Length: 77
Image 1 (tube, rainbow, N blue to C red):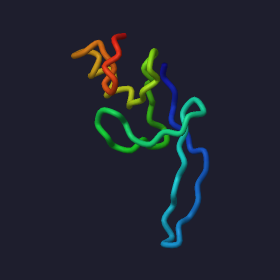
Image 2 (spheres, rainbow, N blue to C red; image 1 turned 30 degrees about the vertical axis):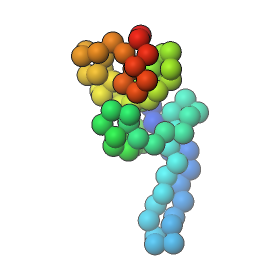
Image 3 (cartoon, helix red, strand yellow; image 1 turned 135 degrees about the vertical axis):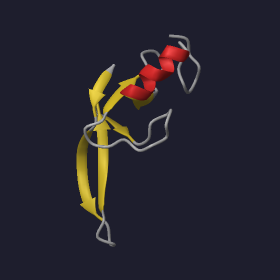
Image 4 (cartoon, helix red, strand yellow; image 1 turned 180 degrees about the vertical axis):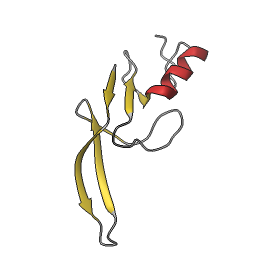
């Protein structure tokens, strides 16, 4: 399942930095399970169908070309 990553809320820290809460399909998202970089607003998130683990769309597609199992739990697709 694919969904865009959206900004749920934004706040300023004491240091004056902007802190975002990001969601996709109503789920809080943080880091891609494959490349480990943080999701950004506008990224396309891919969710594995059986186990619901998350990754960037491009990372998941590249992973599935090499291995037809989940990148986290190894659940067969």
